[in-house]
Image (tube, rainbow, N blue to C red; front, top):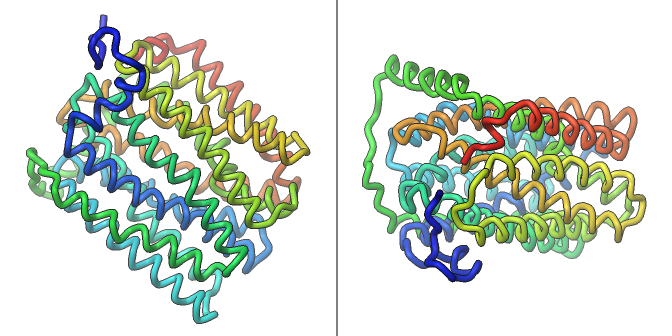
Length: 414
């Protein structure tokens, strides 16, 4: 039996708020994550729109999104840094890089000098500030709140990130429609300014130390060995690869094309699609946070991933914008269960002194996303985004159900 986070009889809301209420350092990390994710989501929307506006090509949109996620391939290095370096300072440096990249592309658009390759470079630099350092945020979270509260803390963190995803992209889309992409880009970059302030108050008790190059490589290999030797983690990594091959290329690369060519609702409609998807994810994360320390987290991970895929298929074939908004909302709910449980189960299964490196292996699995975006973009340019998305959602749902049936270790994990 697991011990409940809140006292007996406590409300679901009390379970959800416990990490924010009881841990000042977690509150500071939560605010930083909120601001940084606001910048990241807004930049994703604006850069994707700018890529399509400059080229008119679905493949170009997918390539821009892929550039932003290519740094996921550096996940093992990011995981090593999370185990060895002072984590708040690491996050501050990364967010400063993203601020500089965002300001540079905003200036180029303002001066009417922006070209497509500028979008690719900006997307890659912004990705460098977020993707490889996710293990840093995750390991800092579990060290601050402890294992009993990590599920709720990850969900509360997701609430902040997904809440920003619900609101900020809609505002960015409205800014594109009203004032142009330059104003939307300045708006996006501005969120990084307050993102570093809360991190200044967080003490990393573990400190940090550098490892010799040879030792660093050995430590990264050790993380791979543990992740691949654990049956539940192996299955989790397989599902991670599936979701990032079939579902996330749609959410992160194709929504501008759905808005422009399928539903013909323009940039404001794009902001609405992304915002409603974020609302579904937000409510899903709130639901997880309210559960406290529940059992069989791996099973929730598998069921949520299946829902994610099937909802995307229904979204693609809906044909009516109002119905599509309902379905993209449901897809958002599934994506929240996938995302929150993915990192939570990984951290609970990994040894405490190797969590960053094991999470780095997880980030590398997510690193299939850039290649998948390019493949999906190529297919979509040939058969259309609706057919591509519908087929991808069916494959994700079916293959995840197969993993569910064949992996009792993951079903029982957590």
